[in-house]
Length: 296
Image (cartoon, rainbow, N blue to C red; front, side, top):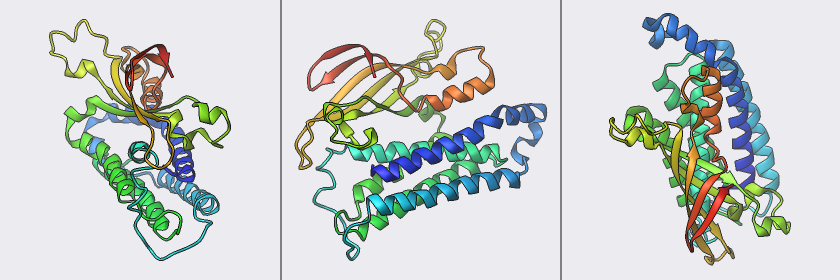
């Protein structure tokens, strides 16, 4: 994921999440009072205006940042980057594209539901906007002499934006969630990167499985619903030309939104926090075995 694009997507995600969380519990209350109007909630133009305003500001700031840091070099005719697309980060950047498209879609869909959209319209609108922004960045890359359009990036952008849509229609898929975590690598501590989100060796992408949901009903009575299992992927020793190693982890994962008895507003907070993998006991299984009391 390109650093400027990452930063603006995170900014957009945080802003829209803050807007949603401020009133999510109120929407739940209104829906409970009259369940017959759940699908007929009127779209609030002021809330839509707030979402559009935040989104427009994020797009403008992102465009300026990406222009300054990514597209400032020599221009060219539109071209495709076939040579370095899968080499320089061993594909870890593709997982970043998938994660941020997924996170953006989820946050946008939540914001549109807060504004009164039905869940189907909200998820499709969120996915369309998230994928539209990512596509804009990729097309602009195609006119940069130093980079070029990346088919791999575009593929994983599409996959990431599609996952929440598929989960909307296929409940069984909701047991799997995407997460990310950061821990400073040796290169980052040496100052080779200005931002930790630029360093793939500092980044781990996680796939968290809600074990409780897939257990037989008879077993669910003794298994805590807030305890997930996650598979993590990172890289080490990258040289930018295909060198380096894949790193895999198995970890416990705290799905705090599933704690019984917590208020709905706190459940919403934990739901969004679960996009980040909190420190937990883990074991590295590739390229060698290392046990961690807490893996950050």
